[in-house]
Length: 114
Image (cartoon, rainbow, N blue to C red; front, side, top):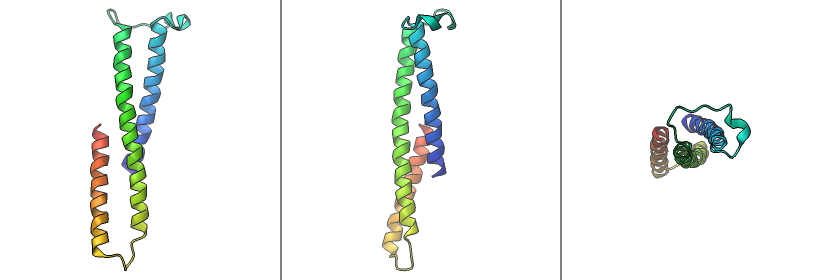
């Protein structure tokens, strides 16, 4: 659960940076002439190409963020199930819960890699 919360925080911050960068490139592109004088890009840099690259990156981050939020909800459900464990919980129910926890852990690890 800690990993999912950390990933959510990271994706939120990355999205903020990407949005700010996109706004900056829109200014370079001529949509906001008041900011153009304060922006300096390396020579031979194509603002349109950079904008497309950031747009694709932003899309990937949104997909990853969706996975993280889904994972967080799944982990919350698993915590509720774990709290309901008592002496009358069958071995089959425990085994099923263990499988779900292992799958959630694998999803968390995959999300970290993304």
